[in-house]
Image (tube, helix red, strand yellow):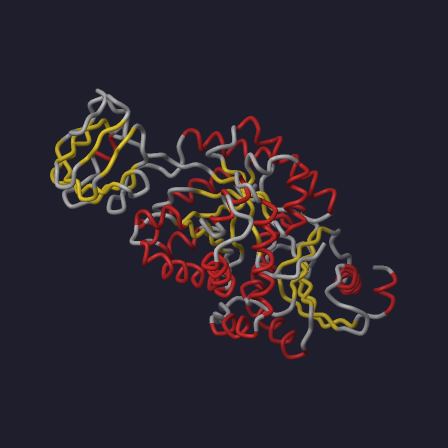
Length: 478
């Protein structure tokens, strides 16, 4: 099964889509990656969900990537005497270490690390930014604030701190348990929430030890401030616009999105654009025009993937949402201006053999108008570097490693195929041509580019480009 687009679609599974029949329908509609949200999925059900996805994968004989999204620390106020209280603009409101139920003057904040990190002038946002407090004074175990945006505050509402670097790891004990369960179940990608510093990512990678790749969710101002360092250590990034739009002025989010997408492309690392992409389709079979434009913008920018959250997890129209996203991506990629934008944003190749080979293969394919670049890859690195070039040709990634094939299902323009490794150069060329025909990307009398490393099976040894001619023998054995 081939896709008629290069941008990938990531669909979140949930109550509306957690049975095998619906997963099959979502895959056929266009989902390339399934996201398991550990905030809502009980750990004991994780392995069952992964097995369901693998059964769909086996049925369609196509690698499917699985992303386990860790919850991260949830910062919340404690409970109130009457379950809620009304705050008035200009009044003082205290956050403290007293476990007594709160009222209109104060509430318990069960996070001593926050109280010790707040400073006068810092902003505190509550309930997704519906309430805004400004820190007036800080004493041990207590922070007195002024209410700037008033309203109702109720039990255990979330707290966001756009100005405060909190000395807490991105992983809680729940996350550590979920991470081990996800790795044991064989997921392909781990999404890390609440990233503030590169050390947060390093901690997860140390536990993962290559069993899964790590995607940093960029949702905090602190992460944007250290964007280059975080992107350098991450295997991929996600523009998590929901929390980013709470902790930063909304009008800054589009610019940040473009900055992240371009930086990720320059580094050759996958980037996912997420949150509220087709939000109205949770309850409507058709999206708003603005949502269509939003998805299209991410595709025009060259994002590797666009993501559905509640639309596919708990919405009334999950299949329609994936189908709509699929149609938008296909249409954008056929637009004449799409490729001019992609080329304008191209980054210079890095001074490595792999990048030079990838850039050379791209240039040859473009000069000769070739439809397919076949990359033999063990670790996936060759395919990642080719995708960084954003070629007009489809990249067929041939790998003996099923884990590599699954991870590459997230990568722009890449069609992963698991196959035994090539035995010699002639076998490499013959089977590359055979797969190009079999998968419907090339036909008899076409030429294709083949990129590989010699000796075969050596990760990071990309050192060869070859042009091969497809003949009737390749088609006969396809």
